[in-house]
Amino acid sequence: MSSVTRDDRFPVELEAKIPLTLADFLRPGRVALVMWDMQKGLAGRSPALDQIVPNANALIDAAERLRIPVIWSRHILPPLRLTSGPFLRFLMKKQNVDRPSKLKPTMQEGMDDTAFVDGLKPKPHHIVLRKSQPSLFVDTPLDLRLKTLGVDTLVMTGVATDIGIELTCRHGAALGYYSVVVEDATGSYSSAAQERSLAFLRGWTTPVVTTQMVVDMWSAQNG
Image (cartoon, rainbow, N blue to C red):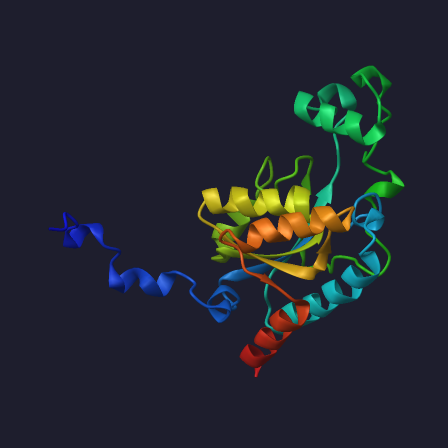
């Protein structure tokens, strides 16, 4: 005999709040488009950049028509002496040095690697959030902005899928947010890293879709 009671089951009347189809995830009013680290020193180093830029612009155009919020992350690091230990170790690997004292400053305010890549630039009404960690929820007002807008779903584009995008999706889920990853508007620094991350996201809670799928869905909702 089952020990499950009526109170243990998910209430049917609450099901409408849970996205079950792609149209549910992408419904205007609940969704925002995120441009992740579209900077010369980050997205600019992805081998997929030539594909990412036009697809990101197509998504921005589709979002603009529906007045869907567009949020840009801008990665600006603090001085090395104020950088956390784990991130110092990450920078040591990137710069191939064996101690923090050998690190060269990078991604600092005013450096060319913090500028947005050619062909992509926030519009005046877009939201630009400065960050220094590989999650857009750490030390930024993102959670407050989303709650103010009534948004609970992030459509993720940019670089790198296997670092900040995946981590933001996972962090967001812990805070109650859904995410959708646009595979041909995202990139990593190798095809192996990209496919490994997308495979994880597909098997988790995040729909992995194409630019055309999102544009078509938003175009239909606009009509």
